Image (cartoon, rainbow, N blue to C red; front, top):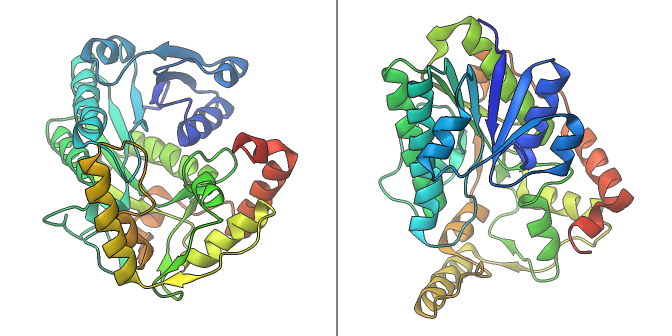
Length: 337
């Protein structure tokens, strides 16, 4: 059966909004489920349901009569109380699964992250068989891993599921990666080696992969339970990418460098101070960020190519051109520049 009545959790967010837009272009009946209403979605003519993932009743009502769910909503970040991440990423996903099973939803596409397998070491050209680590340095990857496991179990109970792991999503209207680099440009330093590589993915490509997953799972239920890395399929130095983002914003490249050991120790100290004094804003550095910034992490996406027919339609160069165009046309004010 084809996707006919689709709901996107977090449909007003960065990735969710692009998925919604692309589904509309395919003439799919799509609904967004978010905590607030978004004028841009209204202009698209999208049905919006306001609700909270942490409220089981809200989710149950929203999922009625839907055949496909794209579960994109999550609490991201590198700092914060564990319970805050758990309530959204784990309890919220549990509610999504319960609502799918109770309402007879046919398929669930779950947005995850490669960070769920990050063990603080270099990860180069790895595939989906890599196991989860025994411990985590931050609540986000830990709770996203817990959510993944819930989705896998749901697949064993008869719900058709696919898990996608996009890495470092970016593009116009990005509200995490690009603005974080721009806002910290004056004090951000290169950490560790400069030849380590990472995967990234342009937001439109990430959205395409999600829709392909929904379509292929609809046509071939045997794909249920599969996990897929998705990316630009072009690993790049994270520091070159950071400088490309800064150039798109009309800012100078990064200057200065510190060792990965110094960054890790600084992260440990900042975490201790922020916990002692109950500071809720993000520290300048954390242990997780130090390890992530000082290691390679790029992945083999051949499984997504084979099973989903995925290939990045927008090159990194074209994506950077679009980002610069957006920033120049007013996006800079979006980031308070």
